[in-house]
Length: 216
Image (tube, rainbow, N blue to C red; front, top):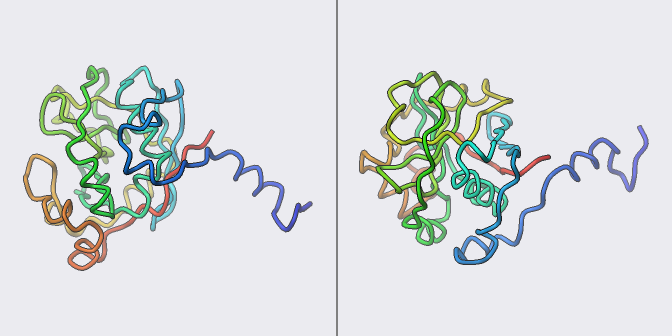
């Protein structure tokens, strides 16, 4: 295969297909204009994990506010080196608490308004977790099955895992709700205060997001 400075042509094309992240310092500047950028009408986010990759496709008109927040979080590296802290078999896989508590302190109270609930919680669909109206923040869940019990509660679906659901299914689930639970359960304080240091010490088998990026 033809190479350019030691990089295979196909590898070079794959690299150029990713949208580069800005300086991660933008995570500490929540009022920066970066966070007001509109997401594309349709985009894909690729998550590299300790079990392999999966890809989420987001269609903005399903949930515009949620799509915009998710797009910018991925671009800023918000999810990089974080944990799937809540994986409940036959229910959901949840993530979105930063590994660095300093980032959490900036974002944990920065809610954003609801989108209309237009779709059902079918297997593979993705939405922001929340505790009530206009309380979405940074936590995301992926439905591991059709979850009718989540319908009608205000969870606005932003997209769907279109590749790698077998990877999502394989995420370590042995801790269930004990390694953090949902936002409504009130058991996340140690995660928020200590981040990866707490999870890696107390729940070392949790799978990780190594890196997330926007791909064309």
